[in-house]
Length: 317
Ligand SMILES: Cc1cc2nc3c(=O)[nH]c(=O)nc-3n(C[C@H](O)[C@H](O)[C@H](O)COP(=O)(O)OP(=O)(O)OC[C@H]3O[C@@H](n4cnc5c(N)ncnc54)[C@H](O)[C@@H]3O)c2cc1C
Image (cartoon, rainbow, N blue to C red; front, top):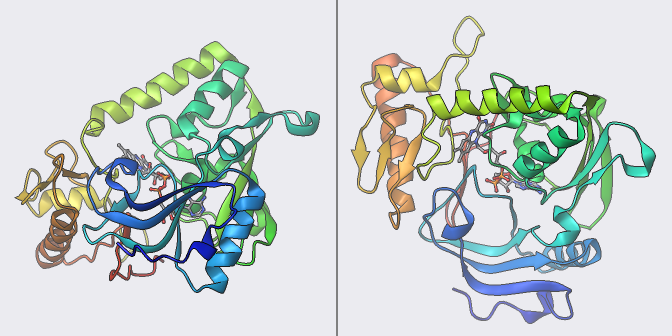
């Protein structure tokens, strides 16, 4: 840890500040090292001030959502990790300003809690998110979803904050949502405005439960993972093929490397044993990539974000 992190970064800031903060408990993998500094702003003004100070002091800023698509390496992370889990960022507003069927969701909102609330209110459009753990910021950033649709399908507009603390609103038409990609600038996502449709709460609940059951039957939801580790690659005919199937064909279902293993249930789920090493997960990812390339002739890229002091993730396409 860097105990001498300048206090000028956080002096007088309305925020919860933790130095040398363990991040394992903030991620679904449940492994990995510490953040030099974890800051949880209590207001948008404090967040704005924090990102401006970080920029002025040349500190790296990383935003942590619910940690369901994230591998923090054992070496931990430098700079400042921001978590938007204080009430200013976790409380949604149904029908803001009387706008029918809209929901304003700050970035720290738990998407699954919001889905349940929308179903109770008879608001349709989020059921595709059943069984997908996410904060609204994390889900919007990577257009989370799957077979039943993506979060982008329900998005009216998104507000981002840049390193100067300036807020910009992006209407749906200006956002290029595609497979696990939002095309939004690499800024912090502040809030997402959803455009939903009226629906019958009983029918919606049934739909939500069916989608959840489908996930439960096909994915090891109880293991420590980040969901699918790899993106489904595009094949020569331009269509996407299942990375899980390629890993399965490479004979890697159930393969173990140190404290990490490939799920026997779903080959694209790489899981970590409790108190295991994050680096085992990353090493296993590289072994899988090599074996799939050798046996299937296909390059597969990681979908999960990897954070580390020395780790430079590849740009996603
Ligand atoms: C059991 C399980 C099942 C899953 N199933 C699916 C599935 O079916 N479909 C699917 O798409 N995903 C799935 N996932 C992955 C995960 O749920 C999604 O990727 C989700 O969107 C991650 O959101 P998060 O808040 O946890 O993001 P995090 O993991 O916290 O962060 C992921 C990335 O988003 C960035 N980010 C987070 N918040 C913000 C913000 N406010 N502003 C800017 N950047 C931000 C982070 O910096 C990081 O780069 C699954 C994961 C698990 C553990």
